[in-house]
Structure formats: C-alpha cells, structure tokens
Image (cartoon, rainbow, N blue to C red):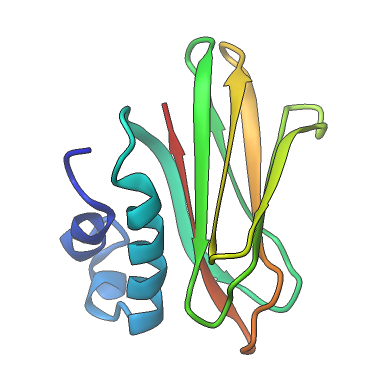
Length: 139
C-alpha cells in the first residue's frame, strides 16, 4: 500500500506536536488498523485518528469522485475489543453497518460519484475514560 499508517504517524501527518507526543495507545490503534489494511489493494483516501468517550461516536466524511466500491476499516486501542462502524449517505441514511469483536471492523459499499458519505466509529466496550479510534477509507 506504499506508505504505512505507522509511517504516516511518524512523518507528521498529524502535525509536529502530535507526532512528537504519539502514545502507545495511538500506536496500538494504528497497528490494529494497519494489520487489517496490509493485504488490501487500492489507495487510502480519507482517515481519522482520535478519541471517543464511553458510548460516543467519532465521525469523519469523504466524497467519492466517481462511482466505485469503497472499503472502510476501523480499529480501537487495546482498552477495547468490540467496535461498531457505520456509513451514512448525504441524507443521513445508513448505507452499511458492521461490528467487530477483535478490536477491528470492516464494511464495504458501492459509492456514487460526487456523493459525500459520513463514517461513524464507536468503541462499544471501552474500559477506560476514553479509547483511541482509527478509521480508514480505501478505494
């Protein structure tokens, strides 16, 4: 896939301050995502790394420039073993949902050209005050 998620993290894609202060929880989260991502073909088009508390959702969005099949991968840190993932279209209607019990989750769908989609990620069983979540969109 070219540049790995770990290389992105250390290259400063998050900004210099964030790259200098990356924690082991962020690294664990990125490694889980990278393990899921490593055997994929295609290009990473959007991604998100951040925290969520309790049962709260993290979200991001992307726009597909053409009609194509899109894969969305998500992972959480080691304080979480179950993660939910959902994608909604521009109307807020669920396009696809998935749940994973290994700290990762994956879903796919056929995106329409020019449409914006929102992805939502939630650590179902976060055992700390917050958990790190990473999401990657690939086509």
